[in-house]
Every structure is written in C-alpha cells, then in structure tokens.
Amino acid sequence: TTRFATIDPQHVTDEALQPFARMLAAGKTVAFPTETVYGLGADATNPRALAAIFEAKGRPSDNPLIVHVAAMEDVAPLVKTVTPLARKLMAHFWPGPLTIILEKSPAVPDMVTAGLDTVALRMPAHPLARRLIALAGVPVAAPSANQSGRPSPTRGSHVVKDLEGRVDAIIDGGPCEVGLESTVVDATGSFPVILRPGGITREMLLMVVDHVAVDPALTKKDFGGGESVTAPRSPGMKYTHYAPKAPLILARSVQPAATTTEAAHVLITLALRHQKNEAAIGILCTDETAAILAEMPEAAKPPLLVVKSLGSTHRPEEMAANLFLRLREFDETPVSLIIAEALADNALGFALMNRLVKAAGNQWEEA
Ligand code: TXA
Ligand code: MG
Image (cartoon, rainbow, N blue to C red; front, side, top):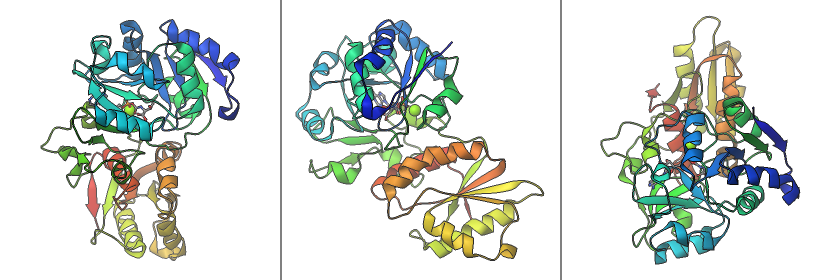
C-alpha cells in the first residue's frame, strides 16, 4: 500500500518530511513534487531501490535516471571531475530546471546510468524537493513519476492515477510551476550540448556561455520526436512518450509561422475530415486560435468539438505549465482524436514542440 501526504510547499516543515526522508534512506520509493514535474525518488546508491523505480514505472532498463542533489558539494563524490563549464552552469542555473551530464565516479551504480560512463545531475529549486533530499542524506534518483510512456505528472493526482499501489509513498505538494521536464545538457566538454530541451532555454544558456550545441537528433524537422536517422544521445528521447489515450496528430500549417486564422482553418479542416458519428474530436491550441474557433459559425464546425487551450502565445511559460495537464484532461473527456496546433519553436517553444511531437508519435497532417 502507498502512504500519502499533502504538504503545502509554502510551509514545508522537517516534521512533515522526516518520515518520507527516512523511507528514502531505507530504500523505499517516494514520489514528490519538483518545479518541473513530479519525480519518483529512490536512493541512487541502492541498486534494490533503483530496481523498484524501473518496476513501478514499467521503464526500460536502458533509460538512465537523473540523480538529484540538495547542495553543490553533493556533486563531487558522484563524478570524475566537475568541468569548468559544469561549474559555471551550476553557479547560474542551480537550483533549477537544468540537468548536467558529467563523467561518473564509481560511486554511481550502473543501474542509474544504464551502463553509460556519464551521470545526469540536477539540484531542484522546489523547496519541498530540496529539503526532502537533504533530510534523506543520500543522492536521490528520480525519473518523472508517471507510468512509462504517459504524459509526465504535474499534479499529485496524476501520480496517484499512474502509480498508486506501485510505490511506497506519494507526497502531494500542489501543481508544478514549470510543467515540462528539465533541460538536459552534456557538460563534459567546453560548451553545453542540449540533449533534451526544457525549462532552461538555449537562449538562456547563451547569456552565460558563448556557444551552445543542440543534439542533431533534436533539430530535425520532427524536433527529435520521430524516427530520425541520428540516434538521440539522451537515451530516453527514443521512446514513445507523453501519449494521451486518444491518438494525437499535429496540424501542419502551410506557412511555417502561421497566422492564428490559418491555424484555426487547418484545425477545423482536419476535424471535419476525421469526424465520425457520435465521437467528439479534441483540439489543443493557443488562446488566440481558440478565440477564432469560438467565433466561427457552428455550421462550419463538427458538432462535437472539445477545444482546450494551452494559454496565450504571449505567455509561453503558461503554455508549458499546461501542456501535460491538458493531455491528461483529454483522457477524462471521450474524444476519438486530438488535433494539436503546431507552435512557434523558438525559446520555450522548442521544448513544447519536442513534447508535442513525441506525444503525437510524429504524426503530422495537412489541410
Ligand atoms: O525535470 C526533470 O528532469 C524530472 C524531475 C523529476 O527532476 N525528471 C525527469 O527524469 O524528467 P526522466 O527519467 O523522466 O528523464 C531523464 C532524461 C531521459 O531522457 C534520460 O535518457 C536522460 O535524462 N539521461 C539520464 N542520464 C543520462 C546520461 N547519462 N546521458 C544522457 N542522457 C541521460
Ligand atoms: Mg520521464
């Protein structure tokens, strides 16, 4: 059975966290909130605890885990060397949604790194997560706390839905602020290489370093979401991911930078094409496009349409925070198909499109 607690992240007390910290130290699995998504934590130095993570999630064993630390000085024992680049990135972006890859030390079990000679490290900014890890007194391996292949959890209820009965504890600490997983960068060399786009954008990294590379597998027109010829260097990027229960397709616009009017037209054309008697069609789009859809005459639209918005294009952080939430909301609404608007892929849009394309299994359709 799974132990539960609800803890207000604004009023985190050691008394409330202590039982869960002790569980982590004793090799148990504990799901907890971070600023990105909920994580399923276990002692990163305990192979039996690590095995329980893979088991609970149904995660392939060749997909390595991120090790979470509470303080800068916790990094040194886990790595061969902290490169000058890593030092710089940690100083600027930790605590926060940046995961840093370095060569691992023998202290890190192979099960964490899936046999790679590198280890992924992150210091979360969430006060509950940081304090829990500090109290546990061990580095905490934590993948996203979802069933493998499902959208990442940004609410305690998402974790309950996916992992209740499969993990030892779940701490509900409210909604996750960022809503997308951390940016993963290789910092073994002299400039960062982005292996997974996320909350820390390429543009933000460029304010601190002169050059940023992007794993070629991510810059294909499928945003790393499909079967690119280049194998992604972040092993997790090759799997089907983030998928809602209904099939999802991306609406390809004629213009790369589509106007919202055109986007709305493409979405409706596809919805009409796919509508079948009785079954509703879902549309996932921006506030601006949703406003145009709302103004269209009913006769021009399929009778059963469920429109959900990610937020305004003027507030990409809001769209990022809503993405996985909306995908999971569609699971509660009977739709036969979800048609998603393709978004601008600059800054945070790069991470958003990466997740959307993966959720769609790289299925695109044009009007
Ligand atoms: O925001 C996050 O990073 C969340 C929260 C809980 O911290 N965690 C998370 O973990 O997203 P997970 O396991 O869902 O994703 C970890 C990603 C995978 O794509 C994995 O392949 C990659 O990091 N990764 C881990 N270790 C790696 C390594 N040594 N080299 C390359 N990629 C690595
Ligand atoms: Mg994940």
